[in-house]
Length: 549
Image 1: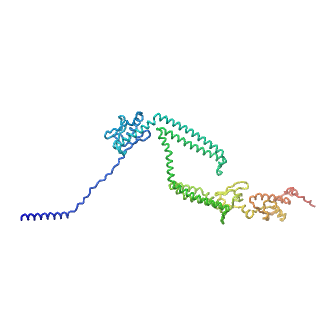
Image 2: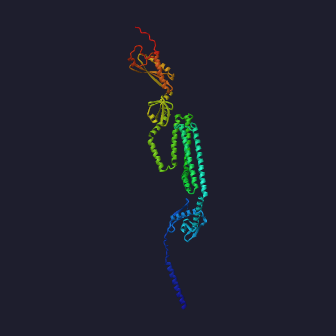
Image 3: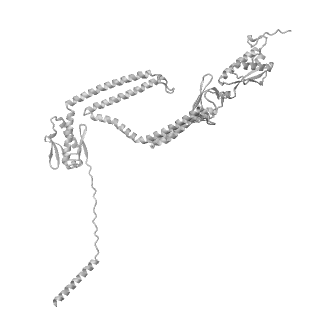
C-alpha cells in the first residue's frame, strides 16, 4: 500500500513539473539576437617615394622608400656611383655579384662591398618576392655594366669613328649630287622660258615667271639639304652611347608632330570623305550648268525671252550661288569649325567684309543689272556721260571703253547706272545712225541752191547710205543767215568721226566750186569788199564779167 502511495505522489509531481514546464515554455518569447556593429576599416595604400636609378643615359630600375636614415634619392645616387665604378673595372665579371641574406635585407655584394639592399617593402613595390627582386636588380646591373664596357671598348670606338667618317663622306657626295641636280634644273628652267614656263594670267611676264620658278627650286634644294644634314646628324649621334639620347630626342622632335598630324588626319578622314563627296556633286552640277550655258550662247538651245549673251553671266551667277550653298554644307565638317575661336574669326571677317565692301557690292549689283538690261555689248560704240568710245571690257565691277583717241577709260558700274547711255552701234544696225552737219548761208543765197549743194556733199561722202536718202532741214533763221542742217545715214557707228570729217571737207569743196563763201556773216558785213578780198580759194574763182557803167 505504501508502495502505491509513493508511486502516485511521484506521478503527480512529474505531471506538475511537465505542465509547469510547458506553460513556461509557451509563455516565453524567443529572444531576438542583435548583431554587434562591425566598424569598417579603410585600407590605406601608402604611396612610397620612388626614385629612378639612371646610369649611362638609361633608367635601370627604381628604388622605393627609406632604409634607415637613407632616403630613396640618397640610395639611388649611391647605387648610381657604385654601378659607374663597376663599368670602369675592366676585370668585372657578372658572376662576381653575389646575394647575401642578412635577415631583413637581401644585399647585392661585389667584392665584399654592398651595391644595394633589398627589403620586403622594396620587393612588394615591384610585385615580387625579395629574392626575385634582388635577382632582377642584379640582372639589370650586369646588363648595363657589360653594355657600357662594350660601348667604351677601343674596338667599338674605332668602329664609331669609322662610321662617323663614312657618314660624313656619304653626306658630302649627297650634297654634291643635290647641287648638281639643282644646277641642271636651273638650266632646264632657263631653256623653257617662254615655252612651258609662261606668264601667269598677265600678272607676271615670262622673265618674272622664270625667276620665280628658279626661286622655288632653290627653296626645295635648301629643304632637301637640311633634311639630309639632319639625318646625318642623327646617325652620328646614334653611334656614340653618350650622345644616343640626343639622337633620340632630335628624332622625337620630328616624330611627335608627325604622329600628331597623322592621328588628326586619321580622325578627320570620315569628315574629309563627306566634304569630297559634296564637292564632287557640286562640280558635276556646275559642269552641267556650264554645258547648258555654252549651248545657249551658241544658239544650239534657244529659250524665248532669254538672250544668248545672258548665258555666261547667268552661269557665273549660278556658280556663285552653288559655291555659297556648298560652303554652307561643308562648314560644319571643317576642322575646329565648332570652336569659339574659329566662329569668332568668321564673324569678324564677315563684319569687316560687309563694312569694307559697300561700294563693291553696289558695283556688283549694278553690273548684274547692266547685264540683264543689255544697254550695250562688247565692241559697241557708246556714250557714257561725257565719254564716247568702244566697249573694251565688261566685268562685274567696272566697264572699260576706248575712245577714238585710244584712251582707255574705266567707269564703275554704279556710275553707269546713274548716267545716260547712248548706244550708237545698236541705233546704226537697227535704224541707221543719223549724222548731221549744220552750215550757215546768207539770205541772198537761194535755199534751193543750198539744198542742191548739200545733197552733192552727201553724194560725195563715202560710207553714207544711199538707200536711206539724206534729208535737209532749215534749222533756224539767224540775224544775217539761215542754218541749214544736212542729215545722212551710216551703218558703221565707229566711222562717225571720219564721216563727219569728210562731210566738212566736201562741204568746203562744193561751196567753193559754186563761188559761195563759207564765212561768218558778221565777218562778211564788217570787212571791206573791194572785189579781191575773197575767202574762196583762187582755183575755184571764176572769171567775172566786167560791170558796165
